[in-house]
Length: 472
Image 1: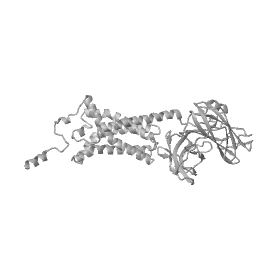
Image 2 (image 1 turned 45 degrees about the horizontal axis):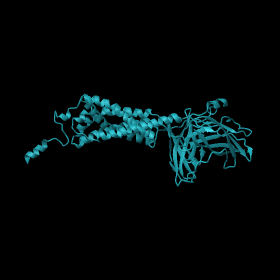
Image 3 (image 1 turned 135 degrees about the vertical axis):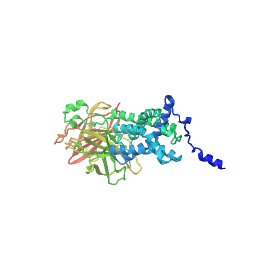
């Protein structure tokens, strides 16, 4: 009995094989064996690093912290979780904390540092990634791909350290290993790499195809002549498909409103987590807010007021339930852009089919409006002319937002935003003698579009709606 007790007292702790010279401790120094150990060590380190990085980025983004504060938080948590993943198995095996801390530092510090430099640099460099919200695919796609690149960068570093008896060798010499299976982590990393690459490629393609410019004539934005605007085509692409672009992001304070009740819609335009307050005056306003239901009904064009902290707000009433799209149309640092966000109204929605294409319509206030112009074709400039009549007589419209009228075009389905303005007019006088309000526009793709014309007469703004079909 005594012999048995003494034998147990001198036996190794369960799970440890640290006898000097044991074959288990002979780490490879070259070849495929060394690479395999380095891959396993890097995946182990990446697990803790990724947990901390994702947690830090998510918290920083959710709280609206600036880029610097978010990166600092992510780095701190990455080191914390990275060290913890290495330390916990050692502590459970009975090693003292004073012995565990040097092992964790020696094993993970250099590897985590390399990973953090790479993944945070990638997040900062990918346009809109840091400004994207937690609900945006861009945020998660960029973060997934950044962690994959961090693994690729840390792998040769760990291989070099292990070949010289450093880095992860400190843990290997204890014979105690923990954490998830490297095979499992590797599989998750492969999925993350494919997901991240897919999101970034899709973002790049959509950015090239849809751009950030508004579909306005040169005469409206640059003061050029009518002939110059018509020759130039006046179109760059569509907007409003994303809540983030060009380093800016729109953030709504409300995601749901009550049906038929006047509420308040407030939002901010964020840049690096801070609210933007310096907006350019464009079309007589610093901010244009367009709200429309997903079936292209319930159109509203609002002009919110901005508080000193950069919060824009406006009263709003939405009479029909369903999903709505909110477009913040503005100019900042000389660049105009439109950012979109989703809003819902409680209740069972009854969506309407888009009305067929027509050349005449009547506003709710009794104005007859006719539309003239060539048949629309995708990618080709077209001139649109709107003629406004009242009781059969041409109407001399009054200036509205510095022009004869205001036109918004939205594409059916994805609600891509095309923002157009008249070719002529925009002075202190109206269009004069009831002549038509003319626009130069270009529909970027084949499909159905809903046009919302706004004009002013006798001090009131009126809205006329048309459907326009663009051929391929």
